Length: 119
Image 1 (cartoon, rainbow, N blue to C red):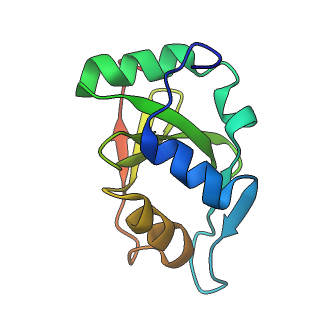
Image 2: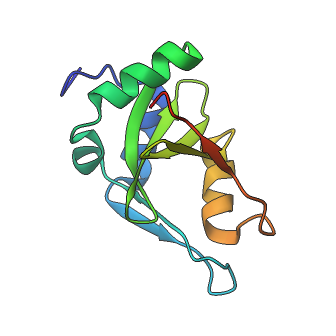
């Protein structure tokens, strides 16, 4: 436990393998995207968001890093990866591998934005 979080196994495994790595999209992906896996940066001011995610979805969401430089990303104990911004949420993948594929390749332009006024 650190910074008020009980980190789940998926988050600690991702950090162990990819910590402090920035995964960038392919040049063909429009719009461009990135995912920085940084446990220190991810935890800054994230405890309240993580608590709200746990209350909403019923599982542990650990901070993962930053998506596209500006949105905090979380990974659930189930492996689901999301990013959050002011009143919005993006489904990056149902697993860490799927989220990486989405960051690098995109998905043909489907909008993954969800209104999340409860955040």
